[in-house]
Image (cartoon, rainbow, N blue to C red):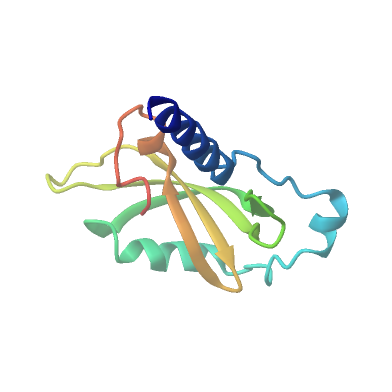
Length: 137
């Protein structure tokens, strides 16, 4: 009976480990050339400012520093079919906090596809070493 439990445990663990894959699909040059990144977001500054308008405590005080223009980007996944292709942009934003003082620049990454911000990440918060659910803005 004990050997049956051990055998079952080994089979169960093997089954679970087979379900979890850490492999990440890296698109090749052909994949990237043929991918649908969406239309180029020529109005990216307006998109970002409008998006953050609803999320900042004092949006009128916000100072934006755009680090270049949007670039083609992909978010890796386990298969080509689930890999997300879009444009990505880094923006530094400094805005007033609840006390009326500027909080200091924070770095944000925006993913844009077909004129819509699909993802925003607070890189400053994420790189601070603190575990937070606020990394998504």
